[in-house]
Image (cartoon, rainbow, N blue to C red; front, side, top):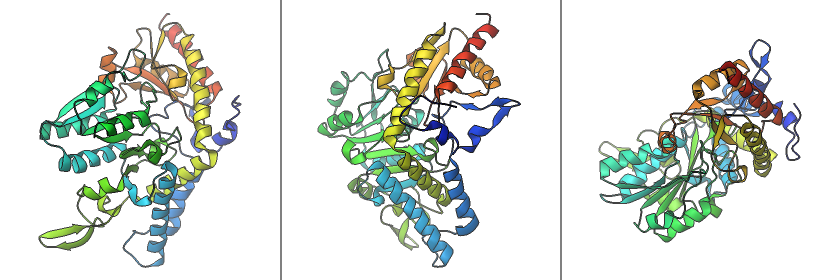
Amino acid sequence: METRTNTLDVKKIRQDFPILQREVHPGVPLVYLDSTATSQKPAQVIDAMDRYYRYTNANIHRGIHVLAEESTADYEAARQKVAQFIGAESPRQVIFTRNTTESINLVAYSWGRRHLNKGDVIILTEMEHHSNLVPWQMLAQERELRLEFIPVTEDGLLDLTAYPALLDFKPRMVAFTQMSNVLGTINPAKDMIALAHQAGAITLVDAAQSAPHLPVDVQDLDADFFAFSAHKMCGPTGIGVLYGKKELLESMPPFLGGGDMIKRVQLRSFAPNELPHKFEAGTPSIAEAIGLGAAVDYLTEIGMDKVESHEKEIIAYALERLEEIPGVKVFGPEAAKKGGVASFTLSSIHPHDVSQILDRHGIAIRAGHHCAMPLHEKFGLPATARASFYLYSTREEVDKLADSLYEVRKIFGM
C-alpha cells in the first residue's frame, strides 16, 4: 500500500508486522482498525521475546548463574528504556504491573488507603475508561469519599471552565485520561496538573492511549502518577507501567505481598524492599518486560513525533471520508484536537451489525461502549462503532472502511 505522508515510510513499517500480511477470509486481506483496543506487534518485539525463551529463560534477581544474571540484566534494561521513553528521572520510578488497570488500582489501594479519609474529594472526568472510574468508586465506598467530575461538552472536549470550581472543593486526587479511548480527545494534561497542584491535589494521568501515540515527558508534565500498557504500544499483553514521583512511591505501603518485594521477613513482621521492587511481588512478566523494551526501542527509532504526525494526517482524512457518508455521525472534536480514534454511529444500524458486516470485508473495528459506559450514556448511546489508527495505518485502509460502510447502507436498504 502507498501512503501520502511525508513523515513515515508506512509501506516499510507494515513489513515489520507479520499479522498485517494475512488474509482473515479467503482472498480478503486484514484491514486492522482496532489499535486503540490493542496494537499489533512488530517482528522485533516477537523476536526479542522468542530469544528470551529460547536462550535466556530463568528467574530474575535471585540466581547467580549465567541465565539468571542475563535475564535480570535484560529485565532491568527494559525498565531503563521505559524510564528514558517517558522522561523519568530514574528507572526506580518505573513500576512494572500487568496493565494500566493494575497501575491505577495500585495507586488507589496503596496511596489512596494511606492518605484518603471520609469526606475527601477525588476529581475525575466524564470521559474516563472504567479503569479510571471503578477503582476510585470502590475506594470511595470503602472510605466514604466524594467523587466529582469534569463535564464533557457536546463536541467531546472537557469543560475546563467547570474545573476551577471543582478545585475549590480542595480535592486530594485529580485523575484523568490524557487521551480518550472513545472520543480521541487529547486533554491539556500539563495545564490540568498545574491547576491541581495549585489546589494541593496529587495527580494521576491515565496514559493508556497517549503514551503509544504522542511524545510524553512526565517531568515536563509534572505528573505525580502516570500509567500505561505495553500492548497498546507495539508491545505484549500482560505488562504495564506505573510511573510515580519517588517521594510518593516511597511513602506508599506495598500493594501485594510475597517474594522479591521484601528486604527481610520474620514470622510476625517484614520489612519492604526498596523501589521499584517493593511493588513487584512474585515472579514478574519477564519475557513481556523484554518485549516492552523492544517495543520502546522500535518506537524510539521511528520517532514519536513522526508517529503523532502520521496519525494526525490519517485521522483528518478518516473524518473527511466518514463525514461524507449519509447517516454517519462521528463523536468527538475536530482532528486537530484528537488522536487517531473515530467513534461513530451509522443511522439506526446497531454498531455490532456494522462491525460484523465490515468483518466480511476483512476490516477489524470495535463495537460497544469501549469500557466507557457513562460517557456513552452522556451522549444517549448504547454503543458506538470505533475505528482506530496507528503508525501502520494507511489512507487506502480508510478508503476501504468508507467503501464498506456504503455497502452496509445497501444491505440495510438505505
